[in-house]
Image 1 (tube, one colour):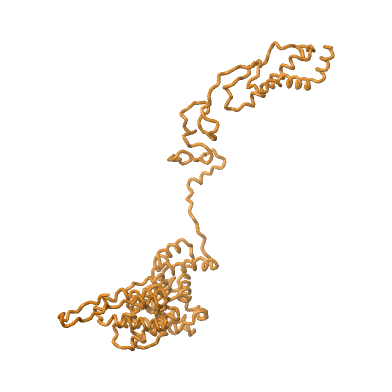
Image 2 (spheres, rainbow, N blue to C red; image 1 turned 90 degrees about the vertical axis):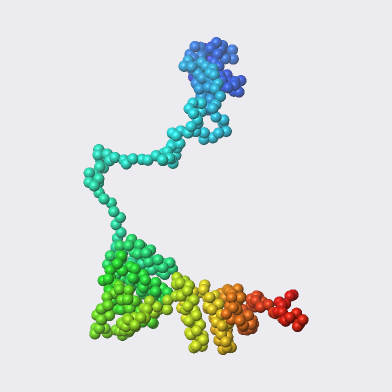
Length: 474
């Protein structure tokens, strides 16, 4: 029987070991450790085993015990039981962990060593460049590096901007000029142009700015003249200015197609440039006798006339009827008063409307309404009252003065009527008539009419009171 068992074990060693190990450990699955008994019986199921079978069986039991111990977490390593070199289980002392299991990503030592500070003083870990305040020194060049080049140490690196060509010039400079029309800062334009490598396209900057101003408002033309005066010197030279205006005179036949008044406007630009000393006084005289284009002749004649008028004291900087919110408030008020006086003399409401639009201050139209009503209060006849109401009616219908600006103008008069009454004794009475007629003509609404202030009425009492004037009580 023993001979047959030994022969079977030699033929099936793996199956034997697995069956024996499973049967041997079946009752010890729940135990934390495993102890090998050196004096276990040399028989299985009553069958005696040979010495070779016993050694194979013991080796495989030891291997399986080691595999079970390796499956323990690293937290228990070094604190639980371990196997000696001969396969014996050695019981160790248990050490309580230094950190709870629920603390994930804990950077402290789990062995209880150290002071509990983060690793590397907080300078370690992914995405960390080093301690705060740490300054890195310049890295020395390794001369033994196979890519080392001795000439690199004496190199000077500079940013090179390629020069603009004709296709990119207009796309780059046009937004700069259009943005300047909004903020009006010539220094910013000079800085932006200095960063560009204009090259031979430098002389085309004034002509591009003037051509854009021809299609814009009068205030933009004034800004363009200021820009040319400020750019001459830091960015542009006098020769660049002359070349640019020469190019403008050659392009007048094309500019007239988009702006019919281009010859007169270019002439005003030339006169302003000569007045600002960015063009020589002999610039216009250089074209005498060699001008064939009629538009160029008109432009030069316009410039010559303006320069002759400037000698008599005329300011060339007001030739475009400049306006806009950048002008002083006192100057705008004076121009509005002059506009109203001119309208009363001429009676041309269309011209007054055009002049008010040219001021380009729609946010300041309440001042125009205020000055118009004050002029009505100070007038002595019905003609002025009717003409100003008719003008306010036409401006309200054409939406040149919106409802909000009209309301603010009337409210300002309501607030200042007490002071106005000092100079104009009949101011309250005239204001009531003006407000009633404005409501009947549809200039104001009911709420604004009801806000009109009324002067407190006075009455004389009986003769027994001595003729004392008493305020009427309600």
